[in-house]
Length: 471
Image (cartoon, rainbow, N blue to C red; front, side, top):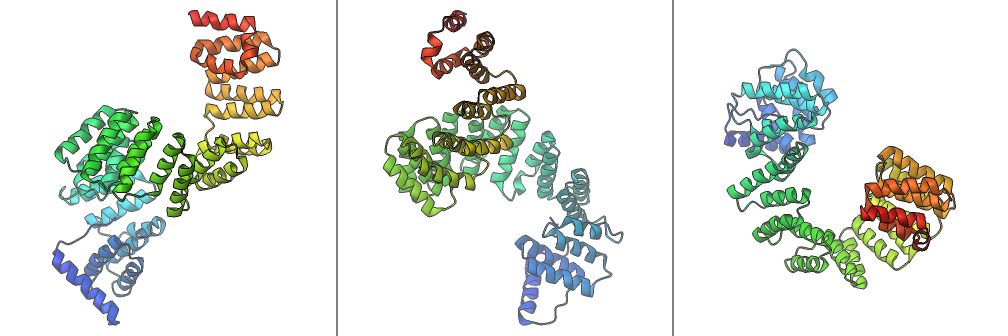
């Protein structure tokens, strides 16, 4: 936020100044410092996020140095320390401020950033860099990069992130933002090239290896991602994210025994995170060891009672056991903890369908519609509920709503065709089936599975399918 104005004090002298302030404060002695000293002391406590001492310093400045222009800046910093930009701005816009001071311009830039006035923020940061003769400005470049990201100017954001890389307070976060820039610019190959360069320059950087792995993950090159995470794990056998990412990928690839092996290695290395127990439980359940899976989901909950994945894992197991009451109980808890995860809500819909509680199913579908109106599975789920309610009109209505919103999607057309046939509208059914076959012939297997006897005993339907099969 601010700039450490240590033009006339070195690090030792600054620490001596802070110690003097602390000692006087603790002893109850009268506190008096000049405005420049108060500004330096304030910056220390801004970095420490010590709001109470920031307020004391601001009060001292206002009491003893009310007419000093620097007091306006100190008051602005007081409000900026709690991100109250609205109250900070009037102090910064006061005409008595020294606008040729880099510290002032940095505070102004931060204030405008909080107010989402990104162009004004960038203007202030650029003035600060000029006033500093471009020396030691890496942290300012990082701030500028963030402003350009907010303006969706990812090219400039990437440029300034690179310029500020050495001063990044959180290299993992900065790498993640740079990755986002590359992918927003649709230049993933450059991302991989850049982070490969980072690991070449610093082969012991776990963060660089993890970021390189994340780039491959975003490209769905899962095996390559695992390879990078393994390098990170080789550097530090106690690094949790590497184990978590590898196990997640193995579960996604249905390589459940590999997932079990890597998680057991993590446990041997005393890496015991709640999410690892969840991934372990998932892999165990998929390999048939449901009892041990339940034990591990419960261990995850013991470590973190608010871990949604554990409750969902228990819910999925009870779904498979047709224990609908228990499944709903655990899935509801997962949904409460992670309300934006539509996967959990879809399973809740299925479970309520099985208990014939269609009113609740429709309530959950309304939630999904608010969260993900462009999810094709939403309209399929609506159709299924209304079919179970023998409400053909509404089943058709929601399929058609999906087609209108999403375009001519084969999964929707196959289902609409089947409803047409059930509704004895064979001409329209054949038209919709033909369009679906033309879009995605592979989807016909699912269409046949809706009712194999009905489909395979209808000569017109079979002939149409065979025609596209030959094509």
